[in-house]
Image 1 (cartoon, rainbow over the protein chains, first blue to last red):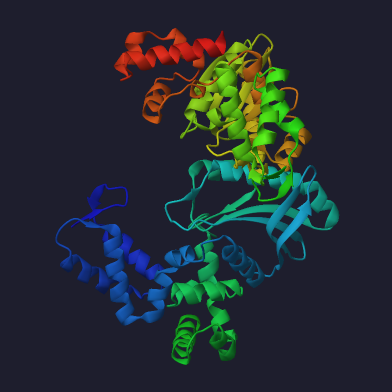
Image 2: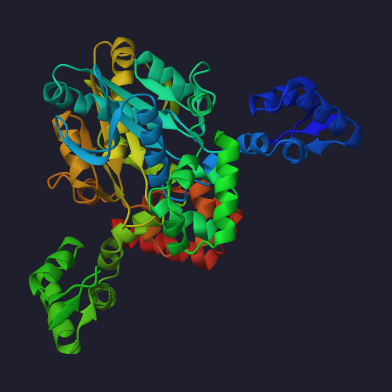
Length: 272
Length: 272
């Protein structure tokens, strides 16, 4: 069985990759193996990887609704657009779940110019200036130019923020919802600032932070684009927000009772 | 007489601004004053600034063809697109005219990553790493993000280039064909690297470097887009290139004899 990669190359299908990907999304080993067997019987000619993964997702949906939602996590992140703001809000909530207090969308004075900081986060020992880089396509990566400009920003802010929060350690983080290029990673390592993307770093990429505490974005739920945009506008960016928020509020945004019940049920299944 | 600015504001027409702009483009004081008088008689209701400048340009054309071409210089710069390469080639030629040897499109090793350098320029005492930022719209400015990433790049290159060219002083320049934002200017001043844009710095902006030595881009001549793209592809980026290059070469690019004569005549009028 052959697969066609997104860059057009054809290669042998690797069952282990698909199995791992299904397990990562919450399927049991048995489920993952069974789905992979079905796929291998079904696919007879070279098929795009994304078709195979969509097929696998549909099969998983039949057995396990919440796994299927997690399976779409990367794609769900892409729906947190089109602007970068929801992703900034989303990442602030991630930081909160990991014990930070946060401020969003603030301006701080640097040595030479003022800077808009996407998320400024504090815990007992540390103050973190976070630059969020949101892409609405998985094909866009954050490259060395991004790493270089955020580094200049972190350095320009360093002295002033150290003085302002003089008992805390200062860190600058670059966080993106897609890939970091190899040069972006090299640059961040070499200049000792934290860069985080999808599956990077391996032991603490964005998807790990999300999955470990079930901090799923609201976009994993089945919401149509117009309703989604209304929710995002009100800074409802997490799947938990749907459980927390009153039915009245959601009705006022134009969702009907049936849809509200469906969303709350989905969210509970996912988070329970 | 009232004018409508590009942002929609209405303000009083200022004759001195139009006169200065005409003089800057090579009109004599008398020509400039005469054209401005004609305009003031002609315009009776609030009129967009750009309409007035177009009108002035047409009047100037009647009296002085080469002045009118210079008058279009900023606009001509926008036609050096759509990619950034012609502008890089163009700026390398500017540097050459000011006594530098240049290399374009090279890769140099920095402390942490490799960098593509748009123009690397040398004279007896100095090695300059130039980052060219080309915009095809006058409304796009080079902002603080640009200034911040080029600064990181200059710093990452500094030690290696100093070592490689150990008897020379090292400078990093950011050059754009449009505006630099106030923060971009502040940042470059504060970190002591040269930033150059249109009319910035006042005593040595890009338009000054061009006009002082008549280093006009090929795009000031009357060339249609398809022929222009062929010329740019062959790195013919200066108006002088049209005089220098053989008729045979231009014919092979698809220009007919009449057009070639017309272009050479225009270029000679402009540069003579």
